[in-house]
Length: 300
Length: 300
Image (cartoon, rainbow over all chains, first blue to last red; front, side, top):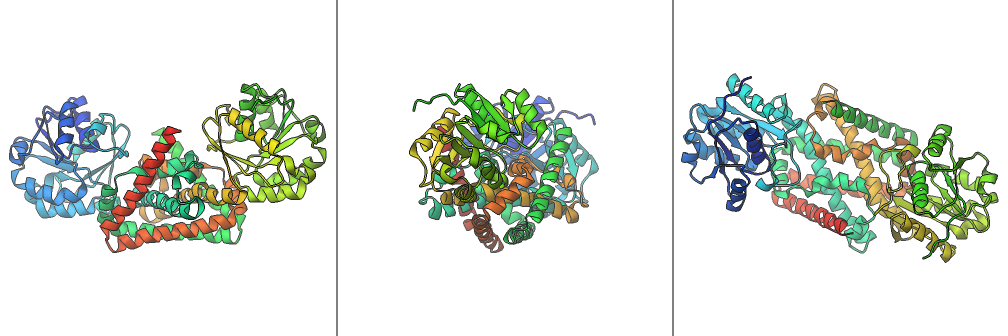
């Protein structure tokens, strides 16, 4: 697809993801002018200094005037308010997309507030989070070889879908398409549940240190190897963001926690019976899938 | 402590840990001659070629003759058999140590089989596992800034304890000392439980792919970010080794799985009630401990 250069990109929420998207499009020479909108004046100043945006603005009407692409990259919880604010001022030709980690809720809100613009709202989720936030963490290469999931709607104009897909590809990303429902269920498995396990594991260590290590978890953690470091890396993620993701994807996540509890109970039962054979079989299956995944990842 | 050079080190099981220990002592010029003993002829050949050992031997009597340090670095399950074999042939001055991931079982076996040598058997656990095995994975720097736990026994000769401690320090390690009981309980928290969670998580993904991804977990895993990669890195560990660790530390591990299930249930209850405030508080506590740990780790 030959992409024409955007005359004006508006990024609402210039954090790691929104900022990196702007930088990636700039590097690909696909955008003329970038306007940033955001709550933190300090962050917006940094975004300007870092050359992520050309201007920051509190004037939504002026910002959206002439904007051919609007990216919603603020926390998911603010989506309704933002859509309500921007809807009346969007150009008829404006394409709108987002970067939310959950999609069903965003789609519902979009259907409520975006009116006639819904046919050019293409929901997206770039899977490229790291445990750092803010404009200062943004970099143009963030999406290189990362996956971006699009969850197009029945109402969508196919040209707008193709356009958003092509833009992400030019950021270096690989595209998957699926329904919002399927996205939320799959992400509950491979992202939301693992984050819950990491948070719970740190809590568990804190609790256990009361009886095993005079209440000082850091003393016990001195004994931890790199394995625990890797397991708990994502416990450093933003508590507010994860509260919102949990609540947004509550039903799917609850189902996953329950199913995972059952998986753990199976292991527990094997260990109770000292059933070494079954334990080894379970570990081997897990080991084999992990190895296969590593191989397939290195290929792509 | 001024260390005299070992005239003969015998390493039983020349894998990642045993091999790296030999290499580290060689580099520190603390050993004259290294004999390797092991089941796999191919691995022993590699160890010889890589300069880890000077000789490999099936003749335990000859190997132990003149040996002033014997390191047991074979899988924990073989400890009883090995101790039975070596006990009659150990020099009176020989110091014996091991590298087992669990300590209570090893100590019990040592008390049964090592007879008068028990006063120079210093149980140790270098926390330096990576997901690769065998002599070819060994390297002299493996223990640099890693933790080694010693669990000295009442029977131990203090000179032998000090000596083993000093050797590990010369390998670059930091030493913690505690009872075998405390070691096994703490390790259940910070190592054994996390491994169970990683194995279970891969199993869970496999199971969930049946309903969500046409039975192909790799398709779903395409959507996974680096967070899941980190969470499941240790699922690539050896199934046999982890079967043995589980069975060796069964009671402590079962208690940890149960306590962790409760921790998960707390989170589940908060989510069921859409209690965002409590969720955020829990995530923040976990986040804070993780950050503190990262800071303390960078300091040391």
